Amino acid sequence: MPGRQAGVPPTAYRRAILRLARRDHSAAELRRALLERGHPAGEVEEAIARLVRERYLDDSGLAARFATSRLAHHGLGRSRIRQGLRQRGVGRREIEAGVRSALAEVDEKSVVDSLARRYWKAHARVLPERRLVRLWAFLLRRGFAAGLVKERLAGLWPRWSDALEGLEPLEEGEER
Image 1 (tube, rainbow, N blue to C red):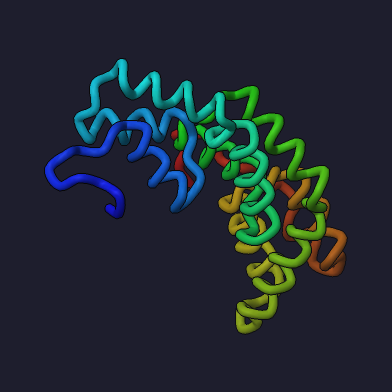
Image 2: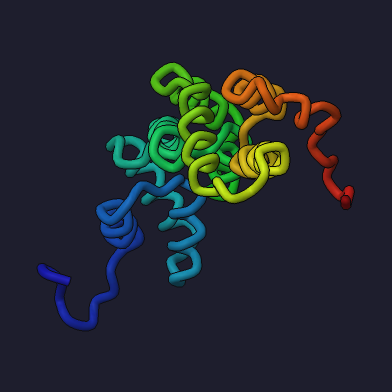
């Protein structure tokens, strides 16, 4: 690292700055990484507090940017976005604010429509009734709500919408 004396280990703050220069991190991610690198807990907490004070670390901003990016560019729905933010250690309040912010910027219905049309073209060899059921399952796995998916698919392909009747997402732990 430039500007560092040989043999002197970097401080928790410096290591955190270098990690943040590469990509956004939540406070929990940084804390875990710094502790794993062997920094004392007190030094880690001081570094985190300083980063928050200096506005280098902001879980609310991270949640909003992450949610917007995942919805607009990765085609993920609310539940997958929430899951990703929980895995990063972001708090429930910040997650919900981030999802609301993303939904204010990006139209979820148009994201579902775009993904559905792309899937429909890519799987043109499959019978339409079967393709619609598979598409429904695909969109649920992407994290979109069952009601929204059913509504959009019925609107896009009304001729085969009866194939969607009776479809309900599996409860956790259930098998087909």
